[in-house]
Amino acid sequence: MQPINATLCSPSDFMGWRSLSRDFLNRQVEANAIHWSIQEPDILYAPQSERILPNASSPLKIPRFFGRLMSAVFASSLPDRFDRLYRALEHIQTHGEPSTRDLQDFEQVATEVRTQILALRNTFPENRILDWQIIRTDYPPQLIDSQIGPLGRLRTAPWILLSDARTLCWDGQDYRIGPALTDTPLADVDLISHAQQTATATRANAHWHGLGTVHVTPTDHDTCQVQSLPALRSLAVDCSFCDLCHHATRTVFGEGSQEARLLFVGEQPGDQEDLQGRPFVGPAGQLFDRALQEAGGDRHEAWISNAVKHFKFVRKGNRRIHQKPGSAEVHACAPWVAAERRILSPKVTVMLGVTGASALLGRPVTVSRERSRLFTLEDGSIGLVTVHPSYLLRLPDDDAKTREYIKFVADLRMAISALA
Image 1: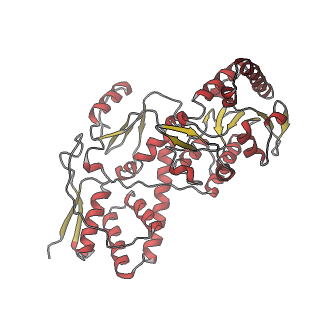
Image 2: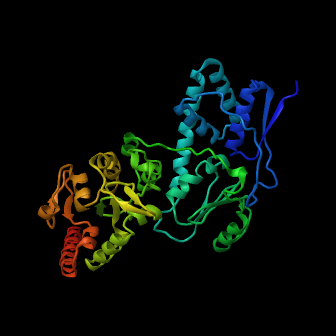
């Protein structure tokens, strides 16, 4: 019997594989009768295109955890991954559950893919570096494409990722995909321009719909094991420790010097922070920068973070209005701040506002009673409580703002002097 040719448009064609697999399962086509192959169509990198696939409903109920494993296997380098995944579905169709062998094998592959994904994310510079960045990698295209969404959330500033099989261009708003440019002998500035012209496939091209995103869901244990801030940032991309992740645009991780001896911890990102992926860049952040500079400090020499890493808000029309995070959300996010402090081991930690202070001290805090004095934290380092800069913005009259701003600068100066 002649095998059935199942042709996918790229190594990342998860939608094509899923549609064909559903059709085969509905028709009870055995795995041995299917020949999986990849053939890139001429319109793969066109700005837009249509595509016709079998419109079959899924005949199976796949356990959610196993679906996540399958996504990881699809992003792996296994040469027979299309066939192995289809055989796993066949087993579920026949026996009602995944086989023990598939579970063991897929878990092992998923662990390897997870490690590769985190390593890929680690190569991406912080968002405070605003210029176009070129990232070169030798990871397979299916793994790279499984991270298009997470990488855009990780680094909102523009970047170009070059591999032997793919050019991925993120302009800060959306991505475009093009063929490989690794053999192009151009200087970086010319390469950036060339890549932007070459990467032409957009979301309007149906061949790039339904890419199988692989999420690296962190655990508390993971945050305790990470040994560097870039690795911690990469892990935080898929944070789901609380429900805020379902509404915010992205995790807003801390930024600054990895050698910082001075740590600032605020409450949570605001609207601008959520959009830009950087802490303290909105109105309160701009006021903070000015006050820190007047106090003799430099934002780039400190580490700036928040007790909660996602933006909590309520919608009013087209506006997103800040909501104070609850104690459960602060508690859920505590492992990230603890890991930042463990890795940095700062000499001085400044707690900006009641949420930042109560999160680090583990108790209720009244800022007006506890501000403006240095004290020893449990780990022997120095702590200082002061107001959050947003408090200054909310004051009703100019005289009060001036008085409180002077006190705020004095608090920051006190923290900086404690570094000596």
